[in-house]
Image 1 (spheres, rainbow, N blue to C red):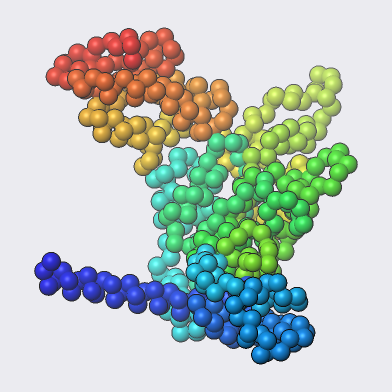
Image 2 (image 1 turned 30 degrees about the vertical axis):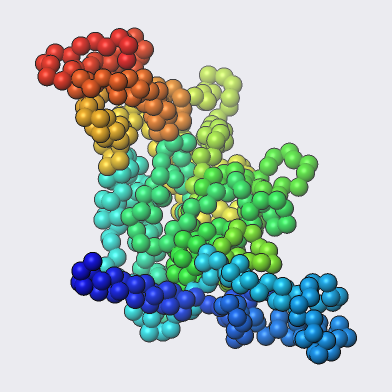
Length: 486
């Protein structure tokens, strides 16, 4: 190995060591017994093996020694004994018998970063001139999401205002309120995909949680604080960074108030009530590195006043509630309103807070979500565009897979329309496209590696409708051949 390479390796090892030391300095010390960070428990007492004990736990340990009635000379003589057998001294037994300190270190995911100084805050402050404008955010979303123009515009403006709110840290005279959002749309219309795409494009911490697993405190399931703990993990356990993040709660319609129930509604109305302070802004005790509170997990306090909440749900059968409100005339006679005279999409666009209350959302919860908007149901043309236009379109993925086998893949227009029609029949939105194309490509992906002479595969509308076979073009051939076995 040359001297230059040795110098480079030595510099790399030194930089790694410096990085490790800096990373250790970034995190707070955590008491091994009570798992409280140094900011809450006070200055830690250092023990062998990088273990830290807070003064309270150390005092309790000394008290247990005094209460045991044993002298310190007897304690020294018993250094080789199992200390766990001594009555009234469980803490001391923990120290003496677990001197293999390798298993006693706090895992990285449970370490809490130290609070930043005023100088560090100024250095890391968001520059308003570098914040992307709403039309720029929407332009980035357009590359991945087809349609839903209104939804993309609303989200772009909300995120831009959120950045400005964080950058200015609210003004002295006028306090800028956060604009929590509620998006309503049928399944497969792109609610979650919009937020996931936004998470990839922006540098703000973003966490995606599912409301179906949330329950009232004390019951089996995730506590409401677990939503914030996911954001804290996304912010690398940096509390101040997490307090300026975005949380997307999916399937929010699943915590609607249950109708005609005789049992306690632990995953419905009670969850909405528990989230009220979360949405409005409060100091929340959050477990670090876990979704539920327990004695072995450190906890920190996160203020949710500057966290932007986005809620999304399909709200099935909400159209029927809106139609009943719109049909104000008599349901009998010549002037009766027909229930099917409204298109479902037109109905959803006329949703009001009263309709959501009838669905099962409590008014206090809806009052903390001032921006309510709907997503359009995907049409045939939109499904065709979804298959071929986005950067990571599903057709581009399969073209790349076959390109690795040096085979071209083509879909004609009739095939794309037939696939879109099948997806509409399944009524699961864009999610149906993957399953349909996966079934179409199964035999082709299986047969092509057998024959190295295949140069191009064309998927036709007849093949999609199961009335024909794909067109196979051999290498060097000008005319496609019909492959019956594909």
